[in-house]
Length: 300
Length: 227
Ligand SMILES: Nc1ncnc2c1ncn2[C@@H]1O[C@H](COP(=O)(O)OP(=O)(O)OP(=O)(O)O)[C@@H](O)[C@H]1O
Ligand SMILES: [Mg+2]
Image (cartoon, rainbow over all chains, first blue to last red; front, top):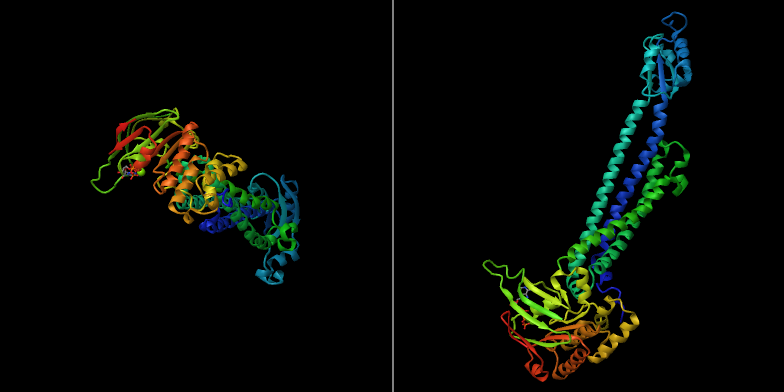
């Protein structure tokens, strides 16, 4: 006979209950994708930035022509200049084979056979400050027409791209949180309207606003947490699949998605996913509390 | 205990049809009931009895004038304290106001549970009072499964189960036969003798003459007799 005694508002038999967790699950799914996107772009960008920024490529046209001073070939002069140049390390001349290999897609398997005047290509590592504009200027003195390019500008583009991806992810998270809060508020309002008379009676019997609000808030929190957890779980296989797709770009093999199962996801994501139900709990609780307390103010 | 000082009341959202004027439902009501007092409240239908009682159990605010309940100025009270004060007032509503999804037992237990009484105490008091009003064998029934008179008795049981300091009953015998009505009056008199202040609105003149007590008589929102 006391079956209902802990639930005078009849909140456990509410019909509209399935709507809230389903919608919150959808929100949580979106949030999981946004978080994963932001994390993935951070991981990949970190990799690309160091690789790209450090790459220095130098092309010396007519490498066997004499240098400006007439002492040696242009290539030798450039190589000598690079040895002493601050910020430049491990210069390596690409062999003709390597060059042919690089050009093969464009020029066919034996570029030399075409008799094209190919420049000499030197790769090196750049660790100096700034984009390294001075390198080309310095090398042009002994060998006019020499080109030098660092990846610093590319790296800057990558940084800008990552930055905007992260801003988008943050915007998605904010919108998801707002929509989630609004969903809870709407569901709570519907619940209040449905139980208007019951609440008036309980209020008349001396229930505090806080008593009534926390009953609604506990219910809303439970539903929101269930929804968010479900959404995060559904997102998991999708994230693993995406991690597998991203694996070839992320270098180190420990990031390879499916082969490594669940450990394929970045560790930060393992912290972020459980945060979704937690965030849903905070949003659900506070939205329901505010809604109920605001609504109760209408009662004398 | 209760003091009304030139109290006026106009319902806020009365008739909204064009040209409808908000009427004063209570007009300059002035009276006092001492602690432990008993008052009948009589008057024709629509005179303002229920409205006056609503002001006492803090379900309305006066448009003008001052009301003191149990030594508290009603307009100055915080929401929190108002809730605590309501727990010390037992109300029998004219329309019962039982929770449809709760059994008779749980409806009566509600005020005690809101006051966070121990479940053992709740069980003892609720079964006793329901036996008193003759519903010992209907504890598990939902309001819909009860007759009008039985519902009224559940409402009465809920109002008195917490031994309120103040009992406000709006037409509590409307659905009761004579025997049940006099049983109810025995209960109310006993509570009154134990110190509960009581005010009962009724159309039942036989009852009023059977239990002589001071009378507040109201007509068109004005007190026409006091004491
Ligand atoms: N919530 C309300 N909004 C607007 N007008 C109301 C409201 N409640 C009551 N009234 C009006 O106030 C007047 C007094 O009503 P009240 O219910 O106090 O009468 P009563 O004396 O209890 O009548 P009865 O004996 O029929 O119960 C009536 O004219 C009624 O129409
Ligand atoms: Mg009435």
